[in-house]
Length: 539
Image 1: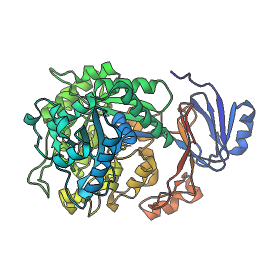
Image 2: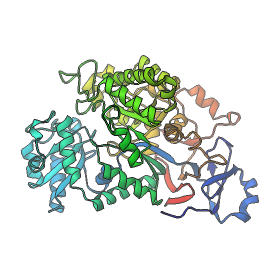
Image 3: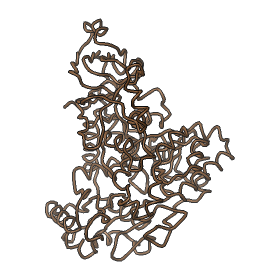
Image 4: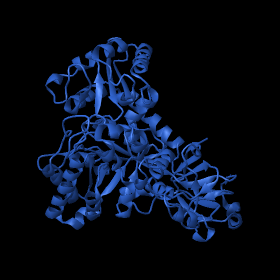
């Protein structure tokens, strides 16, 4: 493990985003903690005791970001391998697959990610024959952008016993549900420890480059493996990159071992991607009303009773629970299950653990209020709206324009006092913290927009609050010295209501500014990322 620092560092000559002093231009760090924030003039008193003086030259210092939902190995495999994110057509996708397969002969199972047929002019995924030809006969696993269905070549299907009997199996097309989970397990079983470590290192390095100081890894038996989570936590403990907090998505309760497994692995919660349903793009998000473009309501993986058993077991164990729930029927099941658990073990005990709901996209006023009543954290991904929202987007294709416009109501959640923690779900969407803040502030549905300041808080302090650590994620004396330094242009205050923005920019308001995130403007560039006093990235 990297030795912890005891050095004293003085940063001066910039802007420090701190509630302790909205006009701060300097900060003193002693070891792992912030010791002081204030003005450049006052900082002169500390210059003689500093082991290092960082001249900011106008740069912005903020708390480091927290990405509250990632899959480090999968994200790293996409960063270092076959990534079809943004691929413009089926023909181009097949060409990229063929090039990747030709460049990696004898690699066992090839793994890729990111295809999305909804934006392709052909309007369809490849056939099995096309896939086999492009892969050159190799075993290939290629997850859809939402990671809730996948393409699997004939060779990979042959390696997966009993695949044809699994729900979600098709002879020619993408695999979903249990069939998808089966081929994914087969593919990941062929990823060796060294390849996994390279992928994880790539993700941690990329996160550090982007000013991310902490990641919440959402692992589980249907999304990764025990070895994958254990190796990632061990790698993070070496102290060379961002911190990692693991979640293990396996059911607890009578006759189930999810709580015990989470404890044994060192996870902070039994949740994350504990699937109640799937995703809109794969038609597996579970709805009350059928899809606009399919004659069914999606897929339910858990019952209300199973959810209640899990929450009760986690609460009794003092462990945070969590669920993946996207469709309104899935969210109803979670709310009913959490409420039933509260009836069993006491609502105050349930609320105290801040159980989580990942994604939580399809909410109405009643369900938003229930989140507040039950003390739930909404772990959400604003980049989903940027990618798939709007009247012509994938959400509208799946649900119709009216239902799609109701998705991801961040403003309503904030008004109800529901804690928000922002993440990327990488590799579903890329690690991109400022892009995430921008997506929330400029939501495709104006009524769901929140201020840049509120969005920034959800992507920094919000991630710590989701872990029950309310003291972290701010730059004040005594707080952890986890911060990022940014090359940023003019600092402004951006809010959906111009009256709020107008008052906030008045110096009398004492509101610190953040970079202008108006769409089309360049995003800030990270110059340095520090995690508990350790520099993990320097441009």
